[in-house]
Amino acid sequence: MAEQLGTLEELPQDYREAMDQAGVAPLWPMMRKVLPHGRPMPQTKASHFQYTQLRPLLLRAGELTPVEKAERRVLVMSDQGRGTGAMQATSTLYIGMQLLLPGEVAPAHKHTPSAARIIVEGEGGYTVVDGEKLPMKRGDVVLTPGGEWHDHGHEGTQPVVWLDVLDLPLFVYLEGSYAEEAPLQAQRNRPDASMVEYLASGLKPSRRGASARKYPMMRFPWERTEAALREMAKWGEGAVELDYVNPETGQDILPVMGFTAMMVRPGETLRPPLSSESAVFHVIGGSGHSMVEGVRIDWTERDTFTAPVFAQIDHTNTTDAPAFLIRVSDRPLQEKLGYYEERAR
Image (cartoon, rainbow, N blue to C red):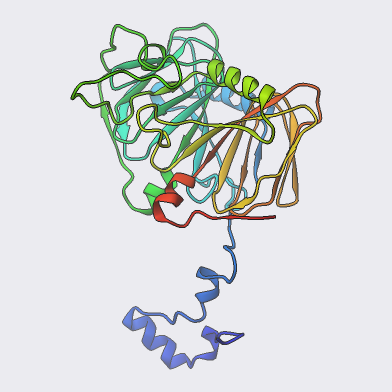
C-alpha cells in the first residue's frame, strides 16, 4: 500500500477537465478523508450548552415569537465542530431546547424521524401521542416515535422547558425527512401506560393472542428512575447505570437512539471505554466535570454536553451529593449495522 497517495494536482489539467465533463473524479486523492486508517476522524467536537445562558434566550423567544408563528419554539444546539446553526449535535443526533408557555398548544404533527423529550423544568406541560396524554415532569423521558401523531399543551402556570433529541440528521442524510400536520388529537380518559400497564418493573400485561403496541410505554418517569439508581448504588460496585428499554421486548426504546440513566457517586470518577457511539449527556441533578478528548466541561443541573465517536471521557463528581445524567447515543443504530465497537483505554 502506498504511504503517500497521489493528489489531484499531480494529474494533467486536460485529464481533470475531461473527468469534470464526464461527471467523475479520482478516488485516491480523497480516500484518506473517507477511509482514514485505524479510527474515524470525526468532525464533531465536544460541545457544552449551559442552561443559565439558554434559559434567558428561551424566555425572550417566548416574548418575541408566539407559538403560532413557530409551531415548535426551539433553540437549536449546534455542534461547534460544524458551527452555530448546524442542525446536528453529533453526526446522527439533533438536540434543541423547547419552550411552552402557560395556555399554549403546539399543533399535532408526525414525522419520519423519532424524537424524545427530556423534561428540564416546569410542570403542567404534556404531550399527546396517539391519543395518550403524557404529563411532563422534571427528568421524565417522553417518546414521540417516528410516524406517531403528537401535540403539546400546557395547563400549568410557569414556563415548561424540555430538551428535544431526534435522529433527524440521519433522516436528512437519507433524504427521508418530512412531516404531516393534523388537528389536535382526542385524548384517552385514563393515565398513561407508565402508570397503568407498566407500573412495576418486570411486570407486563398478560395477553392471550393479542399483541402489544410497537411502543407500549411512551413516558419513563424520572422519580422511579432516580429511586432505582439510588438503590442500585447502595448494593453494587462499578458504574451505576440503567438502560431505558421497551417493557415488552427488552430492546432499546427507539430504533436509532439509546438512552441510559447514570448516577455518579460523590467523589467518583467514571472512565468508560472508548466506543464508536456519539453521545449527548443531559444533567438532571448535581454538578461535576467531564474531560472529553482533553476538553474540560464543568457542568451543573440542566446543562447539556456532547462527545464524538471514540472520545476519551472521564466523568467526575467532586461534591458530597450524587449527580444524575441521561446519556443518549446512536449505539442502537450502530448495533443494527453491525459495527458498534468498544476499545480499552
